[in-house]
Image (tube, rainbow, N blue to C red; front, side, top):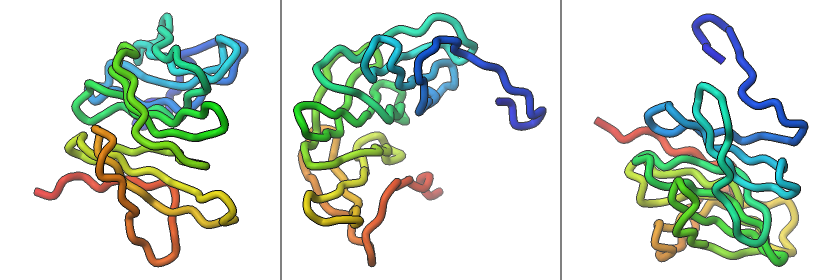
Length: 161
């Protein structure tokens, strides 16, 4: 949708569920999740529409893709073998790395410098309380982000000037 004009244009026409779009930093491409292949996977297409290319091929279901600020990676949530993971991959789907594994990790968001990912984690047996965590893109330095009463759906502010 163009906000200035209010004009919207449909980019996909599959009968599948296609959600969670994220623009590349230069605005030329979109990554999104779709079940068009029979399971929830990640696809990239031109921001102008056209054919979509599947980029996720591992076991499990992929969702909530987010393009990195540098444009070289995509963070995602993966559900596999009863666990949830936060992972990253190159924009062509190569070099997939799972950074976390838990009862429920979801909703990655990139730091402005593209080196850290924050996400929501729920602990098994603790009903209704989610907390924020961060992890660097190497999968090290997994840390809780202190908040007064838990939290979910984190978002980073832009870098200060």
